[in-house]
Length: 334
Ligand SMILES: Cc1ncc(C[n+]2csc(CCOP(=O)(O)OP(=O)(O)O)c2C)c(N)n1
Image (cartoon, rainbow, N blue to C red; front, side, top):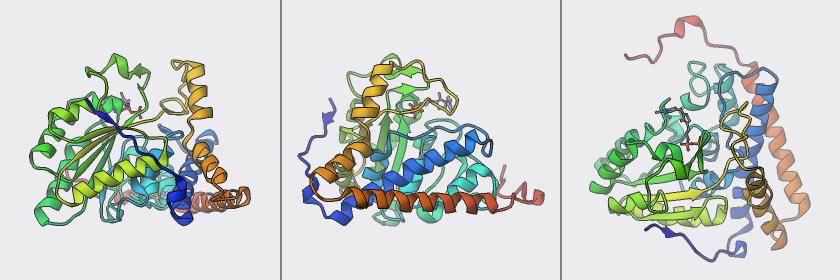
């Protein structure tokens, strides 16, 4: 049975700068998301958007301070959070949604699952959920083969975990002791299906990793410091050649599956509890203030700086032109 990752953490054990980097990343993620929702509501962005609001701690905790630029990540369809934490410029992400040449694909593919930024180790995604679980063993295998200490991190939801690619991936990674870290973002729902209706597990999704001989934990993904600690151990193991780790990070989405989903299948009290008592940003901010690490003014100033950054990023993406028609076959190999 998977272990619940427990460790006494105290914000006073870290430097102020270290902690504020978590805070800034989480604020950036949330404000990016809010900015995008506004663009959707203003009719400037079309197509599906799956908001990551509520799960910022999981991405900041796993990536900030743990991953290097040359480490690989495979994000999921709620994964702007992960791309931002990995350092993809906000204007490029907005550009991908607006379809302008400012985007990572330079206007050739828009939206959440079609951006990639290999120069920052962001290897992309695919339209079918869970398909990144197959691809990730490729980059992990290449690091092992070349003898580098790069790690590959793959993010996927509880719904994606119920698909078969997970098992093929765990088998291969376990067998070859590949430097992959599996992060199952368990927000309890796959569209409107609750995890209890779709998974044949003893208790936790992470229990499956046990059968493949892969160390595994269940962690509170909304506790950014705890997530950081769990991930730190996994990254150290992977860099030393000790193989994969499976982390099931518990979280909850504040919004529906996609923008426009009425989100009426979740008990209103449960949602209220996650928003009010288990919000990763609210709780971290409270602990910074309570421990005297930061002041209200400092917090407000970070938020204002990020607001300016978001405004500039949207303008840059919006001002860029659409791609020219002759580029339509660029990058098409089939
Ligand atoms: C193979 C496949 N089946 C169905 C879909 C449609 N689909 C997109 S997201 C999603 C739910 C995914 O749930 P989960 O993995 O838990 O992630 P969450 O949306 O909760 O973050 C589904 C069924 C798809 N993209 N690919």
